[in-house]
Image (cartoon, rainbow, N blue to C red; front, side, top):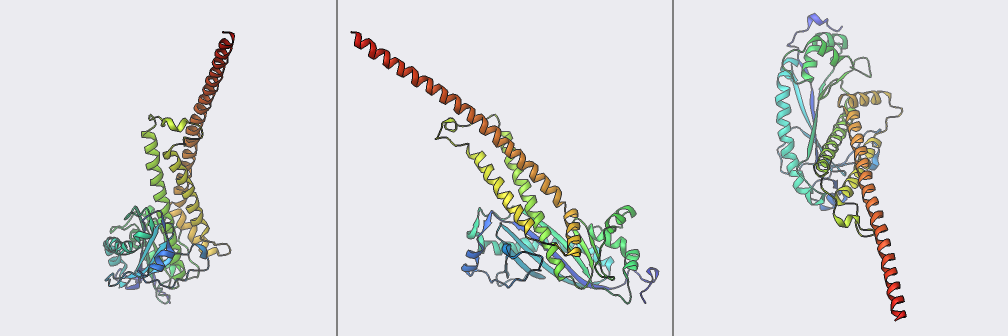
Length: 365
């Protein structure tokens, strides 16, 4: 029979794993075929859960040898310019000690992931369009606990250790308020009777021993957030440049019919708008959860907690602003071009009239 909450102490030992997902944006596009053909990295077999579509499959690799990266689990290179690193750290300890050490452990692997990315980046840099080490990063932590059904059921786990779990997910070493604890735990879900998953903004808690397929969802959501944050920041930079240059007039050649262009900055924004739309659509269509109610519920919670919808809305608003700016800019140029054409036509008519008059006058003499 499971124990009562009062019978379990803070010294109760749990076992499980800590999974740390780190994602980096390192450029515009990565030629995965060229990376594979270069043979500078060891390609690993990749088996994704059935809810992922294969036509956007990343390239799984091992870290370049020799390496001493403890806990390394996987490295995936994505063709849209992202690299994802995953680490697995087994543990056997109390939740109290785990909570105290989690923040420091996360910091350690934040640094480790940068070192590991550096070794990979050097090997793939020449296959990246506009490479940069690195532009944006995103991370997520999953604490997985092996269930103890004979000792601890879900109700007892939440009642006895709910405060520890909640503060752990916020990387706090002190107990959170009752309000904060309840807010974190209220969306807890599980598939079987003895399962529990609690998702928060930077970390998740899993009381489950069949977790392998679920990890891919956490990794994917972290990459999705990475790309949306990167695009949002990139759009801010471009819009700030436009606002700063709004008093700057377009070059004279921009007004010349058939010769001038609509301006390099506007053309770049137009291309950026297309690139962002394509990649965000690819990310959204890379996962298909129809008929997978549990996975769909879990993913929707991740989308909510990682604020993915708000990032998407922010990007869409800025894309619409870009479209409006391009339309105003192009209308301005088109109007001036029409005026210039009208003036040129008048000048040509005037020249033709003058030539005709001169011809007429010379005929009289």
